[in-house]
Length: 196
Image 1: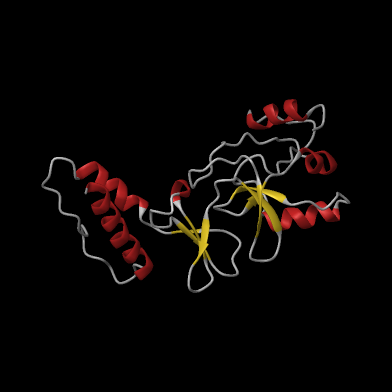
Image 2: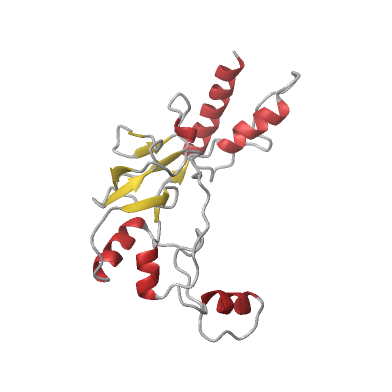
């Protein structure tokens, strides 16, 4: 990072005129870059090809490392969580291949399976005893959530002590994807198994 990066960033967030425009790539999960695109960018910048660390598998984002930040003049370095949105640690990296063929590195507890349609399923906390929490379509770049977490949270809050009936509060509407309904059913079944 440039010597005046910190000062320019502080001025910018305080709505003061910095000496130059602040450039952020990879400082946050909303200013990052897909892992496959980052791999191509590294090559275009003349850097040695190497697998990119998939720091956010949910969105398919790559870790922008110091060599890239230095070459393109990025002013913001990210501070990321050790844990991913799927509850496993980004540590002890192991190889994995994205559906487009890009070689990446993932945390050692990254646990996925393919379904009958070739989609990649990922599990919460790497626990394959649970239903998957997200699905990467066969030719996708990131995971789509399987919406069961909200149902599990409601069950956890309301079921202790008895008297709780899980059901739709205001009917299941026509525009609700069937996949969401199936996820809800899975969540109820999972909660029942845990109660036994």
